[in-house]
Length: 413
Image 1 (cartoon, rainbow, N blue to C red):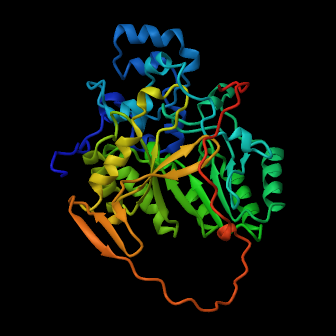
Image 2: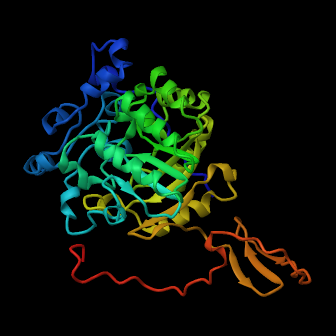
Image 3: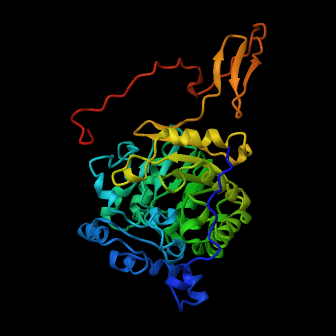
């Protein structure tokens, strides 16, 4: 099933071609990488060739592009390939403006679920803590592109304190996702302050950090940073590899440094057209992640954000990828394919292996397409059970499915 050759990682980067004369000390210094990010179209064109037509189109809208590419990540791009999968994630395209009438400014309805600015409380027991809008690189599929117009600015101390106060006063929140932007862009003192204050809240059991630094600027994962994180265990770290070429000795070393500090690392990929939208590429990526100790966690359908329509695939592409991976690799290598809906949260989708059912028999299809019968155990004789009290609505009757109609007066209609 998966016998087509998968793309191989680059053995050599274009560091020496793009940045001759840069010393190892400079290259391995995350501050040098951050200061020397490519931030404008003219500089980018010195490294990445554009067609004359596309360059002229992009120059007309340059103020809206918001470019930021670290030298390290830029060096992973093959400049001779306009369809390069790393380029598609980092380099702006005129297609971002071709489909401007398609998409939603806030596709996950985050701003409607903010009791205080920066704190998204959508699920009963979880909260999203958006600490900054700064990132080491501005991905072209970013779901929070709406914040690019505000410039690069971390949340102020009063704003952070207001978010922390809400969590303190909301005891049902047990899980906080520390995100941004990229929260590892924060000064270490601010990062340490936020993690310390979250750790003092008795009902907060889990802290998750979402960051792309291990992928796009792995030099940032310094001993000093890892020490700050390790002072607040247990925490979890979710990162964002999308293609096998992003797994390099540098990114692998960054992940291993985090793992050695006792912090589990999961990966959340986004399904992107021309980047990872084949079973072969996704299998290569997930196997590569497991080799460096990173668990493939989610494969997200690309959000319908304005400016990313050219990178979106059909939902059925994601379902097919999962179906063609299942049975041909270990379950540990298969992420959960998820559609994140506008205001409705994450909904997992997968192939349907249940073909028919009665009360005592299931007819199932396996990964090879074989049809199998499975005997369903009969219910045990009823007996009196001790009642277990619970504050969770597990006993609530399921609601009938219904379509959610959008308000005609809504600006997103």
